[in-house]
Amino acid sequence: MEFTVETRYDAKSMACMARALRKTVRKKSSRRSYILGGAVIILALLLLVSRGFTFDVRTAATLFAAVAIAVVLLFEDRINGYAAEKRLLPGTEKAVTVFSEDGFVSVTDVGKSEWKYDKISCIAETDGFFVFVFSTSHAQLYDKRGLRGGSVDEFRRFLETASGKQVQRIKGA
Image (tube, rainbow, N blue to C red; front, side):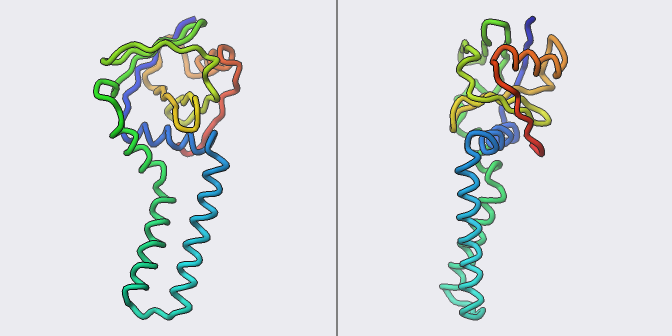
């Protein structure tokens, strides 16, 4: 059995990949970041309340820091997706990947890469993509809309069989 997937990498798809990394291999460190960030925001607000709301440079700096941390925590995946898109090599914005029993081959305007399924750490599935996670900072994204050669369910079963890994469903991505 052979499947072909055409994927376009842009800020939105890269944000989806960042979310998959955060929800799988970065789960513990992400949780710690949210706890620390939330604690800093609460401490900043308590500091503002304890001093009263006299608007001066210290109040403005404290408020700015709390808002900046909140924005980063709320939009973490989008920020990471935007940064990842900017780091893409020219010519890798579009990939066509062929999956077979032996492995998978990705072709871009830059070149061709061959992969084996045993290199995959975990496989995540979102509403629109399959994400192959290789490490805490490396993943590959495959668009379900670009799938040819079978249905999404058949492809999921194929991936689970070929990789020996269960596909993890990620909601809201």
